[in-house]
Every structure is written in structure tokens, then in C-alpha cells.
Image (cartoon, rainbow, N blue to C red; front, side, top):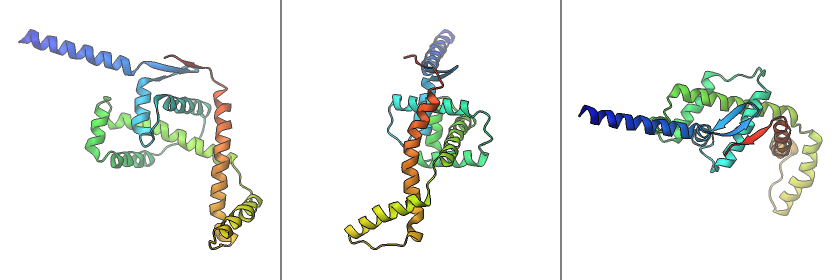
Length: 203
């Protein structure tokens, strides 16, 4: 009986080790850092779980996260514990309860403390990115006026919809223009940041 238990336990250890080695296999090297299969699992299940992204799309996002955080390592932006807790609570809700989230974490041998460290990294990246976009993307009032005159008014008249004064509609127009500019700027920004790094795909 003792021998049988020892064999079973040894077999379990071998399987666990094999699984650990598999999910920790490096798939990309960016500069002096690595992205592993485990990183992809974390991102897929706890960062981008609301999106239908394949592994390559997630890898692209993780590469950018590594590059941005390295570029901004001296940034004075910080993530509060309350912000992490808010994200964690949204995860619990989206997973349909604490037990479901705990089950998902246990499948990767993670506890909540470890999860919070991963979430802190992701949230910090998002905050830095948002801060950069806010500084770089500027919408002039003249642009709002042009949009109001050449797009908003024409569309409202074309479809016989009520026309609101520019003072009322300006914030919505600014938000739209800012979003459009941010999307264009982000493409250039990503390309510029990644150009500073040597990226090697290992799989």
C-alpha cells in the first residue's frame, strides 16, 4: 500500500512539473524580458476575458505592456489598493461569484494576493497609456465648430432630427473627435515604442 501511494504521488509530481514547465515556456523575448504561456493565460482569463482574442493578439498586447512599463519605469503614476480591489470585485461579478473566480485561480495555482500583483501591473499600464493619450491628443474648439457645422447640422437636417445648440452638444463632439484622434495616434505611438526593442518570437 505504501509503495502504491508513493508511486501515485510521484506520478502526480511528474505531471504537475510537466504542466508547470509547459505553461511557463517562454514564447517571446522583448529586450531582456520574456513573455510566457502562463502570461498569456493570465491575460486571457483576467485582463481581456471580455474580448474574443486569439493568442497572437494577446501576445501583441503583452509585448506593448512590457515595452510601455519599461519605458515609463520612472513614472510617478501609482495604483492604489482600492483601484485593484475595484477591478477584483468586477472580476468576481463577471465570473458569476467568488467561488467561480477561486476555481479559475486554482487551475493556475494562483491565490488572490498573486492575482492582485498581476492586476496591479495591468492597471498601471492602462493608467500610463491613458495619461499619455490625454497629453498628446488635443481637440481645439475650432475643430468642434467645424464638426458641428459640417457634420452634425447636416445629419440632423437630413434625417429631420431636432437640432441642439453647440453649447449643449460640444462635450459629445469633443469626446467623439478625441476618440478618433486617439485611435490614430495610438497606432503611431505603438509603432514608435516597439521600435526601441528587439522582439524575438521563440515559438
